[in-house]
Length: 196
Image: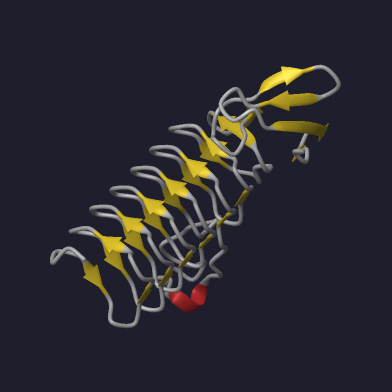
């Protein structure tokens, strides 16, 4: 761990995890094994990160976010936790922790979130999905979906390698890098076909 990292004594770091200078990992955060927390990143109290997660520089992950194994979170990404943020309540008093309910962002296994993406509270990013740089994600992202833009919209599919899949006949898609074959069930569902 970098001597400039701010890791609270009540945080849990798995074996082989590296936290770079200027990063903060708050109390109650659980970070899995073999993770990398980049310079200036923030992992809020109570956040859970799986194994082999890469959190790039200046990413902000607010509680109660849950990030599964093998996820990539690009530089400057923000996982928010409040759909209706206000500094004060209707009574004009400063809001405190008990005055609002935090909503989790969930990022499923193998997903990648590009640089400067904002994911709105309560959204789930599906397994192996790819969110393009600069997107604002306001609704759930399907497994294997490629989404871009503001608000983010699906523009294609990606496989386990993160490469855009190539359309084939009969609603099938192939990965040009791995040769894996997938089948599109409907507009929101892609499944991998078993290999021989």
